[in-house]
Length: 113
Image 1 (tube, helix red, strand yellow):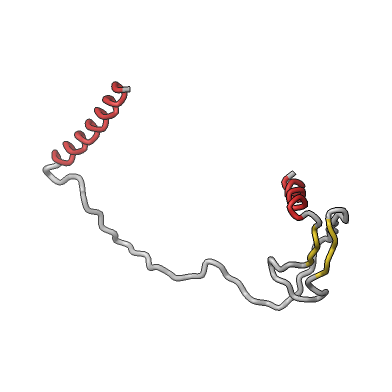
Image 2: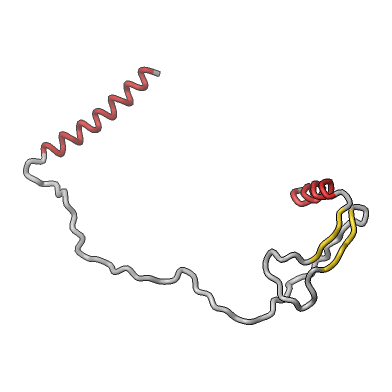
């Protein structure tokens, strides 16, 4: 391990040494050390996302039934009415689970299966 460390250290020192020599040896300023920008481009402020507000009705593409096993609990009520405006994350219905934690674990297993 020591031998490898010394080789890496020697390569780094050699690399830095060669670069210092090349910079010092450039007495006649053949290598330009300053770069000038001739063409500037103006910055423009623009929106990354264009959107517009519009009134409308969202229609479903397909219908899928949700079944709840009556042995695990009972359906309570629909929280929203037909034609009512809903947003993402709004609860649609509620139910009562007889053993909540067992039912939750069982549904999680089905979800990830």
